[in-house]
Image (cartoon, rainbow, N blue to C red; front, top):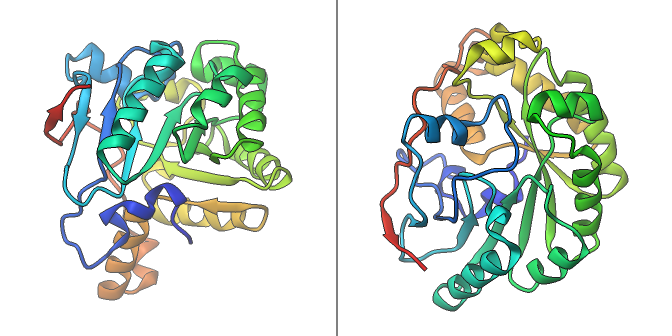
Length: 273
């Protein structure tokens, strides 16, 4: 198992750190043009827990900054995203990552974004247009695939970010792995956190598998046979820590608590640009 390039600057990759801090993020907006069934940002908005716009995290020894964890940043317009990114670049000697759903990225946006961003993560969980509509509530599958191809040909490191939803996207993850392999990209797979169970169960989610650490590991190992597949560094660190104490066989029997409470920003807001 390998951690994502996105995790390179995060304390979570170091198993010696007991309470690692995620590298900083800059939140532009909680608004989004999609309505994904698993989205924690939407839940945070509904429960009035969404963060205000601004910079969250440490300001010393900053090596990586992400725009952003909540909402779709490009809803604010590419000019605003680039403005904020340029100011962050002036303030910090750090890698700058963009997290986006990819629906608003065309050639013009790529030309502007690659001036300031080192890495772009584009979310895509299924490789089927009809399924995409069911997951996101909108018909943008072809737009996202095109955005990935455009970014791949830019100066930005391009990563396809997917959520593992057992029972819903098992076959799609294989197709995504084949797609990223064809285009020499990285597939970043993350385990699912469930904030609203019913809509996911209606789509076929296997909750027992969601809570199985072993199932996630075996899924990733299968995908690694096809493509450059990475997972969160903190997951790997925790797995190693548990394995050292109890042995790898023990992992087959332990469960993760996949049911999240109200999502909430745990870092302090330091400033607004």
